[in-house]
Every structure is written in C-alpha cells, then in structure tokens.
Image (cartoon, rainbow, N blue to C red):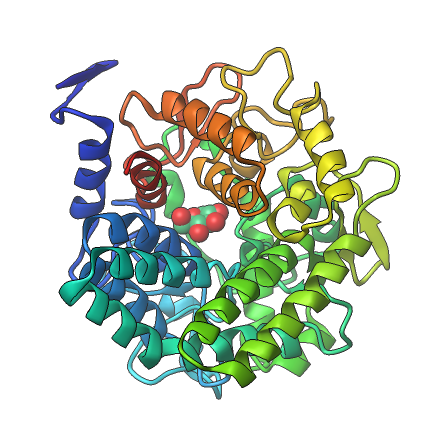
Length: 444
Ligand code: 9YW
C-alpha cells in the first residue's frame, strides 16, 4: 500500500500499479487511452500499450495490435482514433463522419487522420517477448507477424508515398493531432494561418475531466482543431484534395524520424521471415526519411526543425522534437552534438528541473508553459521513446539515467498523462494507459 496525497493506492510495487492500470483500462479487445478523458483507442497509445502488455501477456498484446489493424483504412492509413461504444468524447464519430471517406473500413468508426507510426516497435516487442518465452507465446507471436506483416508494410508505404509525394524525406501532416504533440508551440506559427470560419457548433468534453483548464488547450485552439476536421471531411478525406485545400500543412520532423526508425525495425522483422522484397523497400524508406531528418538539423542550434509548407519556412521553436535525430541517425557527430545540447543547461541540465528529464518545450524558450499540455510538461511516453533511440544506437548510459529519473517521477503511482517539470506534480489525466505501459516496460 502506498500513500500519495489524500489517496491510498492498493498495490505493493510500481509494477503492480502499472499492471492494475492496464487491466482496469482493458475493455476486452482494446485498452482505452485513459479511463474517462479518452475512452477510445488511440493509434500510437495502443502501440505503447502493447509494448507494456507484452510483458504481461503476449496474446493480449497481440489482440491490442490486431484491434489497431481492424480500423486500418483500405489505403493503408491507420487512423488516430478507433472509437469504442463509449460516448462523451469530442470530436466523436458524428463529427468525423469517416464513413464518408472512400477508403474507410466498414463497420468500424474511426477518425480521419493518423498519428506517429510507432507500431513496428510494438510488433518487435511482441515478437521478441514471444521468441524469448517460447512455447505457445512464440507460436502466437510468429503467427501474428506473418498474418499482419503486409498490413504494417502498407501503413509505412502509405505514409512514404501519400504524405511525401515529392520525396523530401519528411512526413506532411494536416492537423496538429497527427503529430501526437497537439498544441506544441512548434505549431503556433502554422496555426496562426488557420482562421476558423462559420461552422457547426460543438461542446468540449475534455474540460469535464481535467479540473484545471489551463492544463488543456484553449477554446480557440479547439475551434481550429474542429475547423481542420471540417475541412477534411468536406472533401471526403481525399488525400490530394486535402493537400490542395487544407489550412495546415507542415512537414513533421519527429514523425519523419519515427517513420525512419520504425521502417528499419519492420525491415528487420520482415527479413526474419523471408519478406526480402518488402524489407528492401522499407530500408529505402528509412534511408530517405533519415536523410530528410538530417537535412532538417539547424546548423545554429543543432536541433532538428519542422517545415511549414504554406509559408515555406523552417520552424525554430526549441521543443523535444528537435531531438528527432536521436531516434534514427547513427552518425556519431550528429549524435554527439545532439547529446551535448540535450544534457546542457537548456534541457536536462536546467537548474529548476525536479528530475533530469526532457520537457516538451525547453524551459529556456519564451514559448515554455510549465503546466500546459505539450507546451512544457514532461511526458513519460516521450522519455521512453527517446530512451529507446539512445539504446538502439549505443548511448546506454543516458538511456539508463532517463529510465531511473522517470521511475522516480512515477513513484507515487498516479501514472499521470504529463508532469510539471519544476515541481514534479502530476497533471492531466491519471491512470493514463501509455504511462503505465512504459513504466511496466522499464520495470520488467
Ligand atoms: C486529445 C491519447 C491522446 C494522445 C495524444 C495526446 C492526446 C487527444 O491524448 O490527444 O483529445 O487531446 O495529445 O498524443 O494520443 O492519449
């Protein structure tokens, strides 16, 4: 039993607490992203959830990923939300109307945009855990890999073609939600060009679940979010028409780095089961996006930048996305420079931090907001992702330091969505699935 503030949590260890969160958010075939705030399946959350679940049960992790694929569009896109039967989330299926899209799946209600492609990391985790345990787990994992390899491949191929038709090596996004870092100040300049016109009214539901509204995006931001959805919906989510008409077009450097890294991971999996032609294509995708990410590095700051397509300008805001190269670049000089910045006074070495963890925006940036969502707080799931990139390229000592610091931050067992970097206080939703999942992975 642990004490935290006024609540008593009934579990003996952090790992048991994390397991408890995942079990209570389990709705059978899907794990909802958060118990009340997000009662549906989010694409990249589900991948992190599967990474945690694989530690508990390979078959249950397989189910989660198969559910993700049951919402995949016929063109290959994996939608950012797959709706459960729960009501009470805006924007729900009646706003998205994904059934108006030519490529939408039948019988599954989804959103009409995507999120970062971290899924191959989850597939690798499931296969790794299965092969390690052997027996029925191994069989289930191998079967899952052969059954679903083409579907994951199609997802990557869709991103690489439709979202980068001119081969810049960067993924173009059409909504801040696609980045996963919804209201990051890296998008402020691009959102300044999104001016909502007359539209269907809506009521926010998120504010019913987070008492301090300053921890969430503003009402104006929400009207822009809804406006962009309405713009895409009005062209039936057609990719070309959207690209030609939408008010928000950005090449996202973090998503591009994730695509590069995940394509290599998927290629390795493909090679392990003899899918050599597709594996070679994935290697080429990885190469192209790695080059795109490398070109996006600012010679001045050493951070990688996004690119606003409408204004034709690089985006310089110092956010955690600037460390995208650490996920996909092996080049030692690039990594060393990034590591120097990351461990320096603008980031992990900042003297007001409660824990030496990456904040969503640098505390020294004028855009930094200590408790507002993606504008400053620490998100454990991003810490995990950065740690994954560090380990993959041999920067183990820093990866271990991030793991230790993050586990200390999580020690109270709230499994919050995000944390105040200076006080360490939990913010946003509690019992957030992906926070519990990454904790579980760190602990087992
Ligand atoms: C929202 C579920 C999602 C994450 C996103 C995060 C948030 C949803 O929650 O967006 O309605 O605000 O920004 O990355 O997938 O956890």
